[in-house]
Length: 309
Length: 153
Image (tube, rainbow over all chains, first blue to last red; front, side, top):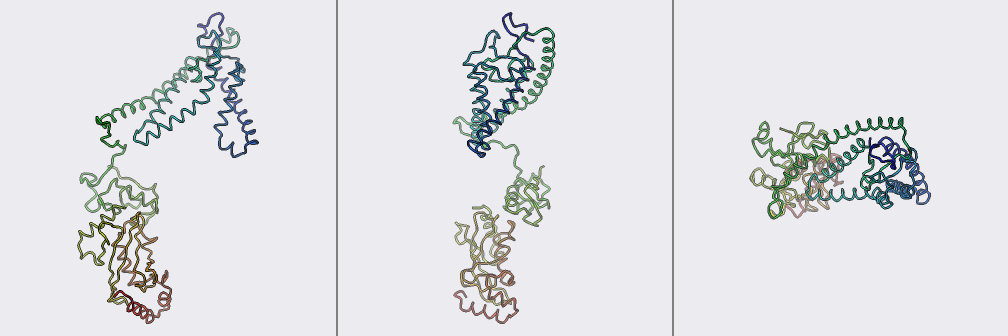
């Protein structure tokens, strides 16, 4: 525990258990407030409005709740419930008003910014930058998990933005030895939880890092000195073309041609009846009418099987 | 435009004239959306001795959608052909179409229709009624009369 770090005039830092408990209490309160706020808006602007903007209403409610508690320097109901209060990083003073304001603004605007950024990345994906969104999402996920793990082990900051702006919790009363012992035990349980999260995030992070290295490796040889793409980005599934006589030699002579496009089959795929066509040709037709073009036996698009070697 | 039509054209050219009884050919080889064929009147029918031009139009979504066929207007007296427009009613070229069929198959289906009319889905009510009544003399007579006065011999 970090109680030993605190000096004579400082309050002991709060432990993970009480911070989590205060957060849970606050979430309860926020839920009640959101319901009340929604009711008011429903009376003022109608059912349609509240149905269309549920997340916006929830965010606004939380924003107002933080404005009238944290910004004013008053405890939220959850903080009061477990008797904790904000201190600065060193634990020797109260956090500045502007850092509290920045914290509130960033919790309000952070999700918006993230959503916008993801949208922009996704647009980039469409233009050929495969996997960028998934890598980005993975990184954010990984960072959040790492943050959570640190919280469980050290009991410091539960919220990412509180870490950034240095809003730490301290216990608002004198802790006697019995309470201190109980808190230490609780902290121990949270530490174990922290290591479990660590193992989980590492096992999740390894494939993401691998993918990141792979995409970098792949994209390098494709771009020539003029910065022009020289190869098409590789798709994950390679095409099977019966143009090559070595491919699927068990399909003989004229059967290698697709009866729909009259070319050697690309990605030969069969309907439930066993008739074989190109994947694209058969899929296109089954969307028009779900039956085999040759024998008219039912063939829903999801029943088409692609042959693999 | 589907690449399929181009491949059908190449196959037709490669197979040679003998395999192409109806002389199916594109109106303009540079534009494979409009085709023409000539149907010979089947033996033993009132159409015997006459030949009929048939227009075939290939839609953009061919072969997912069937080609549409049409006789020149007021040239084909037939229970399943609208006299004034030349429109053909044939299940193969509507709900019965599947993309394994090709243009040549479509033309052959129309030729079969000349020998075996289907009075159950008529576009020419007069002929269909006579056919259903079994008045073959009147039925054949009307067809022969129309053909004799048609501009196409």
